[in-house]
Length: 491
Image (tube, rainbow, N blue to C red; front, side):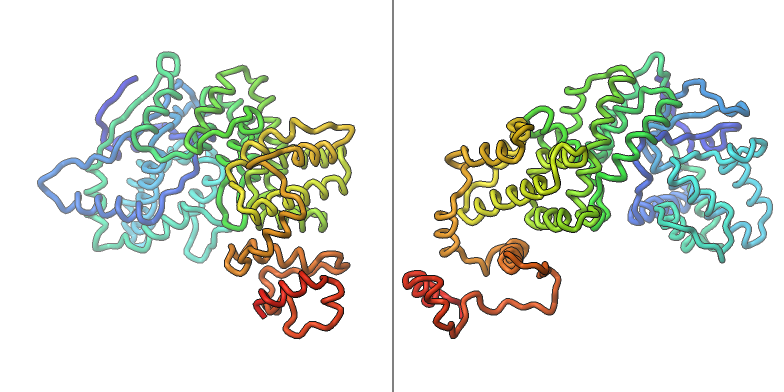
């Protein structure tokens, strides 16, 4: 390892060099708040004639003596992507402004010094080589005219638009002056002598806010050759990233997915902050073949995790309704079990009716327990072991038997005690999702036409028991129940 204090502009001005962001790095995700703070610091530093330096942290890269086809040196950035990308955006905003005010000298200096390798082929022109999903955005802001529009969404576009809006003629010199004073600790690693993964973990422990999924992705990909990195990322990890996502909230759920996977494999639920450590423990550094076995299983299960999280992606209407119920009740604790059952249905090990019956059984089990007020933490142990109880020649019955044989805090409430508890349950003051679920199941019991209550503004809750019941209610319910409902009806 070699560490030096280096000026940012000198680092970016290095000739015939590409700063490559590897596929295992998290996406560029600096917010406008962070961009505003950096630009403020740059301007204040430019104003201050008493200081010649402003420290912005470190940039860590691996120097593998990797060269491109045209002979350019490629440095692999393992820490500092966010700062390096943001500073590049500032230089592009300066470059675009210099073009507008027809300052050709400044245009050439910024473009040829900080943004491109002048004599490189077109594919290697950009000095900053971001991950695939950001490459098009970076090319766009460098060359697009004001009338063009970028297709899609990118933080690069959003942050560049901010810099473009605030970098003007009256502050252009201050910003250039401030940029020239930025310094960082330049840490160059040699893969033959240093352990990039261990150094990366150490950096993360001192303040990098990486998710458990980020750490796992880096652990999987960092030590592979560039060719294998790209292949493993595209064939496996990109599929996992795309599917392990709450599409309604546009929120990644990779950490949660791998936590459920480890729960299934280890029969133990890792703490949310220990998912990476448990993954490393379960799958220590191994061969590429062993790695692909693990990733193949993750890739298979994530398709079902996606539909459990996003029921709209299930094409079968009847299954989708049951998934929506499970989603509404937030029975995420059953996902380790349900992913495997879903996989069995997809592989034709069980039929559709069996699958729907299991989805319904999970709902009945958890909702009955909710009505009785049984502890929810008992569900963890139940579902993480339930798939092991499956008898493949008697699939549904074996699951029913396993649940019905449980006792104490793990029990499956019987009809009579559920009915008794439901009479006392204040269903008007439970979670709205649970209340809607109960009413929707009652409404659709033996209904040929499924009625959706949630989100339906045409439906209001009035009375379960009518205010003026006719004689058939007393015959159907019997005297005792009729009198109880009459006395306790909200009507």
